[in-house]
Image 1 (tube, helix red, strand yellow):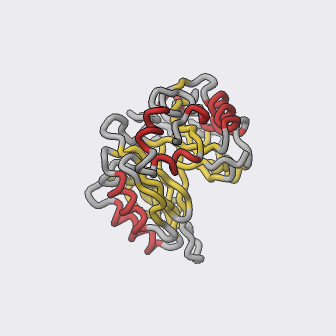
Image 2: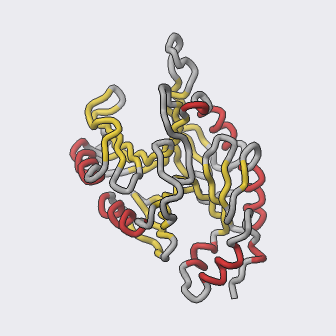
Length: 278
């Protein structure tokens, strides 16, 4: 299965404004489709979604967007725009792992890690980054292994652990991996944190058919919990949306959207043959 995996950001009715600003800041970015409920867009060539969900689910730093830029100047430019009316979580500066790095919360509540990659090829890269903190501290490697048992196109790109003798020995300092070819980052976050995963940032799995929906729904809910309209939480508390690929097209059609929504609003797992596409 090569079903796409990408992040969905839950906003308090600011999806259009946020996605427009993000697309203006990064190269190879554009709005793909819009509806009153959702915006799909590309950032640095990768698909994202923004929802007008209201104030129900706050975004937390547990899943941030890790943006790497090709120069210090580009890093500073994007940082300076995103931090306007936002707040600083880690000041932008020189650190052992990057010539230029910082972590911020933007005006919409989304958190970003901005870093210079040191490359000079003009490439920008944006990757969802999961931080396992609190009761989940030390679970990053277990989570990666769990996801590897569910998805295809899986590869460990980087796996760096805290060294022997460190208080956090064996925990994941930094990792990069792929699920169905989509890049993700996972880290264990030591220290005291007053947040964890929420529906504020979820991971979307678009499925071609009912067989794929059934597979991902069954596997991802093992030890987790089902929610409504294709939403679920896995056993680590990470929120996922599993829905048919055709749904975005149907919900962007003003003549069909209301009927389609009525047909799935009480579903937990999506059942394609019960969608009203007339």
